[in-house]
Image 1 (tube, rainbow, N blue to C red):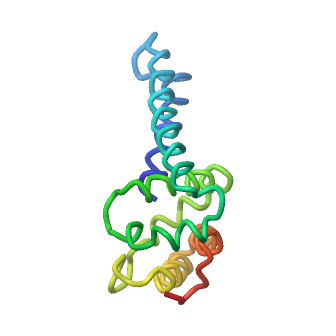
Image 2 (cartoon, helix red, strand yellow):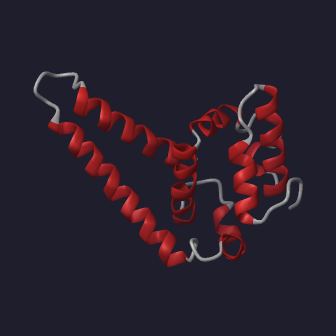
Length: 147
């Protein structure tokens, strides 16, 4: 999720720099930022294609679950970043769900179904959209509260 948020931020930075650069006449740097973001996205897309994410996300998740659930940046999380980025772009209120992450005991060390349920509850507590945790659960074939 952090990767997707960073990619979203790079897009916003590129647009802003292109239209209102902090230094006069430096608009072209916005294009370089956009190109940098595009290169990252292309790399992540290659990972997603190689791993088979687009074909059957629940099967992809089941196959790579042990690697995905490692609490660190890994190629499976990177591949999933594009799916999350797409949600941020389609429904910007999904970004507010980030503020509701990991506000419970056990944090990211609990089983994924329970994690998604806690995340939705946390979103409700802070009046944030629950769209992103719901979408991810459906996409990966994980009903709430199920390990």
